[in-house]
Image (cartoon, rainbow, N blue to C red; front, side, top):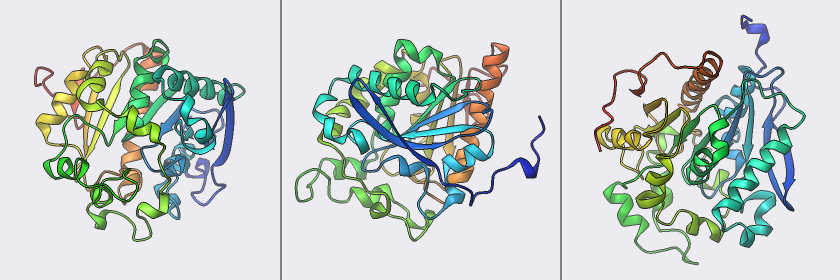
Length: 320
């Protein structure tokens, strides 16, 4: 099928549909933008202190992943992670990692039960959501996913971020003082109407436990088990995690069992890649990778190099 202008849904069309599904007695909420006869389904997991709205930028439909994906023929399902949205009252039951993995797979199955999946399901996550996404991708069921996109995470913090994260806390002791400034740095990259308050949702206590030892221990251990195509994105102005080429290459090398790894340094982009002025450009590159995974699932192979840096020059796996 050739895509023509008249086939595209307008950006000011119907808003994504709020959805709720229950698994093992726990409800999970989210947003759904369903495409007719989709090429694939993209499941998106938000980061900390926000919810699925992160992928449907408030007041800026032109930056929305949900609307763009649907417009281009992909069904997009953004879920509220365990402890957020409808599952918030059940936070104390969700500490075990396997419980959270089973919950999300169960909810995805429930919400897609009577919907077309196209070539399959692709998983995408941002920031703290990468912890859960990587657990899902490294699980036995993860082998059935089309691929994985991770953004806004890493293994080593920038020096300034290290100071902030381990420095004084705000009243209540849950949020480091100065963290918000780093997450939205530099401000010129985001619409003036946006900021922490526009998408802020209090994070559950569970979150601090799930990301403890994430960078040092869980990230490398889980990454080594992933056997699907992986794309890792670091914003050019990422202020929390190191984003220099050497560090990005080291992260790519962790996915030693993946059939393909693409390392992307996204220009003019800060930590919140799906909310800045370059969000549409970022989302288009993600969807391009999804499409490559769809084709690879059909043909049984990738024809490009195993590891790519910025989608171009080969990045050496031996760099660690």
